[in-house]
Image (tube, rainbow, N blue to C red; front, side, top):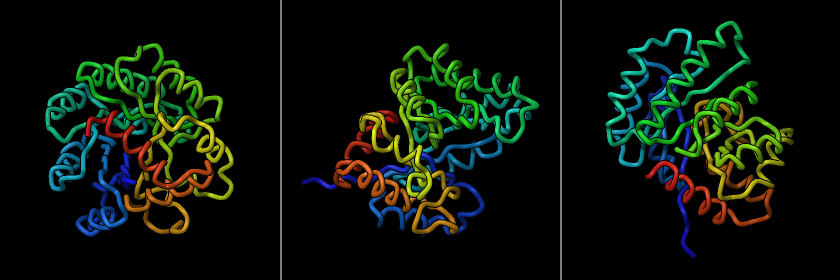
Length: 257
């Protein structure tokens, strides 16, 4: 039986926590991670994620402005995304979306930035990586009103209910799960991992954040996407290789990698 490598579809290895980047990428490969996607979060990280992705054959990137950074986003930042997205290693737009957890004082600016990035993704025919925190209804409504099945949508670090996951899947969106699935008390995420169709599932780490068991409390890194895959296989009662095969084929299809 063929053994499939894993794809970490969301990993911030451009951040300062990864001074040992060569070792991090090498470690990921030794854990069976065949590809890594690095999303930007603001204009200051656009060039950095492109630089990191061009340094390593198996690393790709996405360009976007995180909703918590939307307040400072200028029109020229969105123009810059379009300009830089011609790089062959840029495989998506994002992460972008809505975040009502930290600060609700600039929701209009978040929505404006979100809509701009949806239009960019559609015009470039690139998938869209979504950050949705405590903003499920607004995020879903904006997506369904504007995407119309034109491009793939990835719901990064999915935190909604199984019902919401099913609504997203009905709209053709992909559900990305990471380290949280290994947490003992993450009942909602366990249910989603068990019950959503494998053809809509992607894996991620969100490194350096949300480190899975058994490394919780340490820095997260792409290698640890393996622990999410193992937990999902356990929850579903299927083989690790089945999870790896499905999620990797999904990632290849969505991102064209």
